[in-house]
Length: 234
Ligand SMILES: [Zn+2]
Image (cartoon, rainbow, N blue to C red; front, side, top):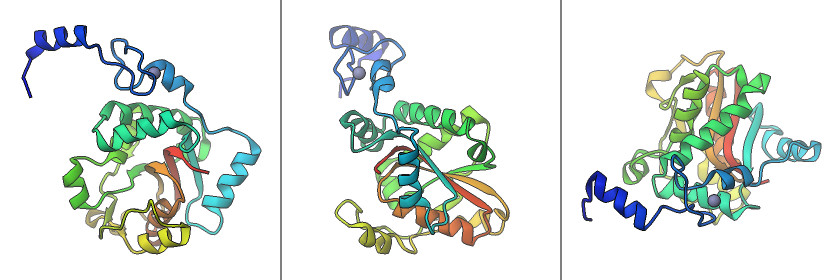
């Protein structure tokens, strides 16, 4: 790659201005990857009774999670999937920051979520993290904690084993695949007794990952575990 320097970059941006990844409009100064118009136009999780019931049935019934919130609809909006993809595979930190800010806004106005004493991301296996260079969920939690001034515990959970990709598995297959994959981080044994924790993932689909993480936290003494994600499939 050619190193252009600051002036070179400015000229390059002038000739080839960066465009929005989801609508191709030229980005304004301060916008990264996705334009402000797209962000405000992404399909939001509806705050309807029906939708709340769907979430309760799918993610909370007989599970360790005490409540769940998410900002965008994953399946319904191609642009949301594109943004998540950029965060996950292209190192788009700015997307993680914006997702974090949007989750923080939802958390701040929800009494139970706002009462959480700590925020933790769903961990990647160390080998996967090395390969990717970062944990996309941690980019989101860093931003949430900066917004809300809540304790950030990125090492609260660890992933003990690599799991096969969940994409092709059905709900039962995913549950089995993920079972026993997480443990409490070595610095946190016993220290989360009575704590309310907010667990964060980039996308929640079947919920098998987040449910298993919540189970481990409860087993280790967490009082309440809430979950939040940038996008969700319901
Ligand atoms: Zn756009």
